[in-house]
Image (cartoon, rainbow over all chains, first blue to last red; front, side):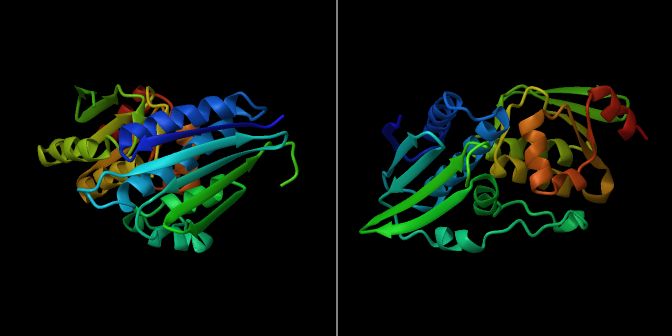
Length: 146
Length: 112
């Protein structure tokens, strides 16, 4: 059975928390382990933080749409905003956590979000659709083929 | 954001009472930690047992605090739960911070 929910939020960090809670509840209702639900929540928060930080000018009222869909094998989260062309999203394909821990002075204090999304989800795809930024994240149940 | 402070010998134990250290509170957390460090506390045990969720902004704020301590002391982590441990491991920050299961262990390791 497929189940889908779409909610529009104002683009701010309180909304990110609310959206994270919705995604967490949705994923928890499916056969994901707690570890997988934690991973999905973190990936979605990183993606939404990116929208809040970069999609809109500080004086601009922006929104994002969160669509969560589950089927027999996976959960898909689609995040859509009407903000500026997302330069960070283009880096998604090459995002990696390059810090290896050997030099504490080189530990990053930012710029980890895209790499975390890639690490935590099975698929992450960004596309520009008209004037919209669309990020689609997919996580399969651990027992399902990816 | 609510953080409780307790001086134990030469160590400042900071207990985060919030459940989340995320982008919403990261700037406030950074300011608080900066005041602690610039106020002369350089041996810090950060108790995050109550914290259920940290995102990369929150993690970045903790790393910033460690860097502001620098060579003057150390900032150790205690009580990290599984999802938080996973984030530290995934970002290799488990190699940057000394991490302890309990406050007693963290405080004992930092005494000097």
